[in-house]
Length: 161
Image 1 (cartoon, rainbow, N blue to C red):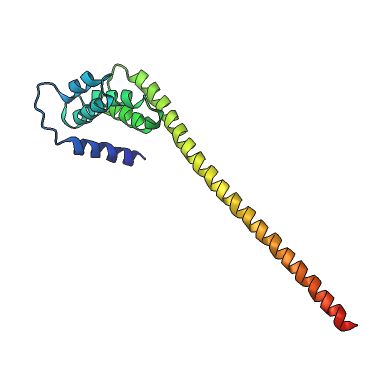
Image 2: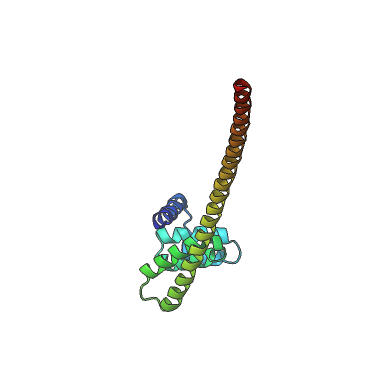
């Protein structure tokens, strides 16, 4: 899962690397300006900051904040917090970030378990339906055999008279 998240983040950075805006503000600063107004554009600026700015660690932290607003984005929160801690091991808020990371990991596990649980429930329902259909076919087969047995006994009784 980590490799998929890393690949997705790298792809996002690669796809957005064609931005040639040469304004004085860094992508990180532009991202901060957009927070609260346009979270999608802010996310894009922070992704660009990861690849280009010296504020990559802070951009990861801001992305974690943005992704934390949607429980379905928990894997991205985890990944960005991990990257923040790797890039900024002496962060003042390290303990708070580690606690947040722990909560985000639990949330990520819950999201994945819920998805997995739904899949397992669907699989269970399909198996149950197949077993019910198999039981019906067996009942029909037993009924057909019973009728055939009765018919053969009747014919045998007629012949032996």
